[in-house]
Length: 219
Image 1 (cartoon, helix red, strand yellow):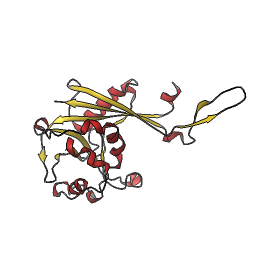
Image 2: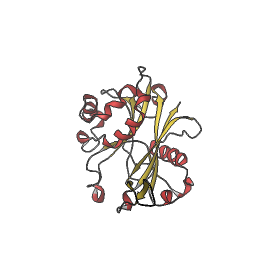
Image 3: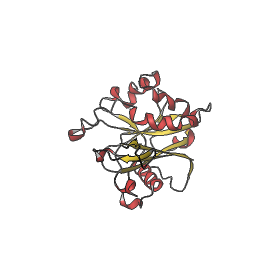
Image 4: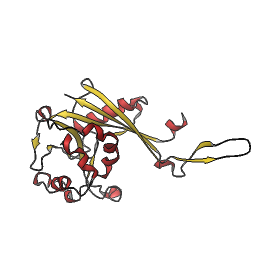
């Protein structure tokens, strides 16, 4: 119970969507670099936190594990994304660990399905040092009181706010993974105790977090 209350909690949705369904959305288009795209109006509010919604062909998802690959470079150079400040510095590092957790699901030869991602702009003002470049992210965010400590509910709510897609009644859950940050363990032994493991509190408590990632399919 202590683990739940003492750390930051968030939930994120990796959504697989057919190309045909994505292209029915208002403003959807295919870019020269081979990805699918919907422009978003960013103003920093909960429903306008991103500047683009991307559909990445499943065949290319694991390309994000290499920041220097030709596929990532082609996204940075696509003229349709030039409205995003410093798009040539676009970072994919924020999605690499979650993608690596699910990479076996993306080893497919068909090209009629996409995985959805956001582009969030570089930080301004107080957030400039934390987010020095625009970045590709997974739809999701921090848990709120209304989520009633339910990670899946949190993820769906955040996904719908950020993407504008209503999926609460139309998604199929495929898998999930938990990623913890800021936790440390140590081992010790004594005359009265054999080998034991104890959780050591990180002195930077605000860096401890639990994030749940759900892989889902939507129609």
